[in-house]
Image (cartoon, rainbow, N blue to C red):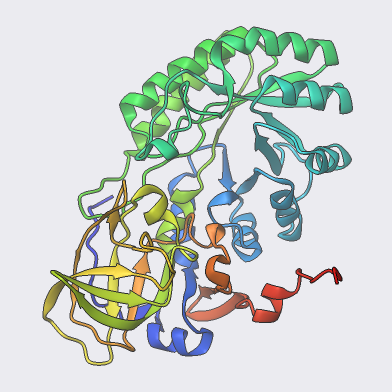
Length: 421
């Protein structure tokens, strides 16, 4: 893929006017377009199974689109299992249409998994014990922590001793004994070390996967490459070479097939890669003010809408939809409405405020935070009693409301004042 260039002026999203979207659905508002999702799914068709990590963007309309594209789904909670059902996924199948991946079971989710026979990707020995007591004889996958990790932030690194995720690599034998005790068949292995995997780290992961697979033995019928494929947020960013990425995993698969004497299915489990580029957060500039040497654009979206910058110091490209477009640029800090100093979209990891070169804009102009389709809406909150925004899907040039904006009645509807007089 060629390097990406970002326009700082944006008039439309997938053929629909940005201002038309804002006027029809209000701001802040998440907008996704289907063509990019289709393209990113097509990028990965070399793999036997593409399994969408829905925690990245779990609206049931997005899940329904994934199912139409032949993508299976991963769930990390009971709620996500219910979302998969609502989008039309079946409880089982070959390969399983829904997999539950976690490090624990809460009681409700364990009941749901048992009721529907959902395939489980176990991230702890205790999970094996719990599923073994309730579903003896079931097939399970083991998520292995190989002892090392990778990520653009320590908070997105899912391998190594500081990570809570997965079964520690030298506890595999103990887990096999638990499986034997309950008649569980370990049919799959999963290894995900974090976001932004590069090929050097990937080769180490492949080697660790092969070593673990040989310990488990011939019961394995599938291996999962996990996710973490890089997404381009800045012009300096680069995509991973997907052909080499596949070849590394396929070579491991081939060696294991030779070892076991039967075919293995090769899965990949992307989340961010499939949806990040498709998403836009449309906001309105509500104040422009000078604070010492910094000029602020203050918008009506905050970290209650998009938390990645305050959580990870994440960079998102931005553009302006102005009523009177200007070619003049200026350095600005972009912040939100929340009563928090950290409510800044142009910040670096550690909370350091940064500036961005953006076109001159005025109150009433729209600012679009781009590549916001992954870990955007799904992390929304009601902090400062802010209603949760609408979500819109643009398909074939037509916008469709896929989640209405939360109302104040919705916000207060679950609360009550007890009679304590």
